Length: 229
Length: 102
Image (cartoon, rainbow over all chains, first blue to last red; front, side, top):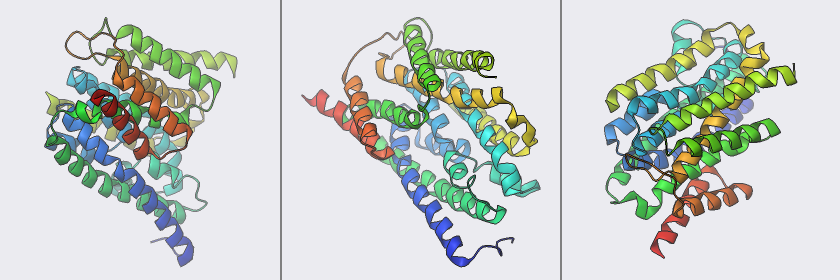
């Protein structure tokens, strides 16, 4: 191990920060589990998403398309588009974490919003690794446990609309979107994408309005190249 | 079919993560790549909100305004008040549930 250049107090602090984030994030796995089951997925399918896809926004997108009656593969496509940001996280993390071979392949599964946030700001490889692992492993364990709890609970409560679970999904997406709306361009993107989606809902199969919104983002990104070189 | 889609989504999402930690870091420096990565999730999340809140669902969906809109509004208020994620989700759900009760 290469943790020798960290004193025990720093080490403890990084681990407890990571675990705190894991507890907060893990808790909303309960809402994911309940929403997924109310969207028509089985408990096993819901748990498989949390175990194997393991990136929250993509999972919510997947079940959102299923809930709206869309084709499952369209749900998968929406989830993949949202997963593109993890590639960018990985690019930032790779030189910092400095893992290779099997370790890097295993660590890749834990590259998510939270584990990135808790490790990219660290000044040494040792500190980054501890931040990444405590957050990544912590979220993985708690996210999957809470997904299972939510899925079992959600399965036995009757009509999910009585509990406003259909409305909870919109709230979840808004909470994921909110911290990203800091610039004018990001707000413009959000408004255009939402308007495009609203226009397409009555005329296209479920899931297509969301994919079309991805095109808006690409268009704005390409256009921005000329404005701000 | 759902299992196939789960498999595609899982494999694809893992490969996207693996590509990130495996590709040489120079690619990240391109501003276009950075902007696409910033804007793509924003556009998708905004569209997902629109669909989730205003689609009537079913095989031939249309637009509709119901308790979900109030739930979204309540979630926005919770976010302005800096509520944590879980509280935002619960606020949206409880608001819609109470309106349906009334």
